[in-house]
Length: 78
Image (tube, rainbow, N blue to C red; front, side, top):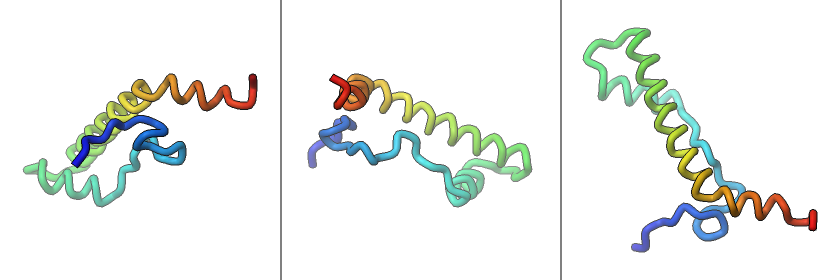
């Protein structure tokens, strides 16, 4: 199986998300697996850890594709 490149126009489409969503199920599973004590604080901490990882992933995708994004945005202006 070929490894993904995560490049717009190659293995990503313009309609793909830059930022993956976070479901209640994602948070519940993270808390269940990672927290010995379950409290408001640990739920909040797990949520923000998931969010931080999603933002890091989004930033990587943006940086990897920023030139292609700009190229596509310029179409029809020249």
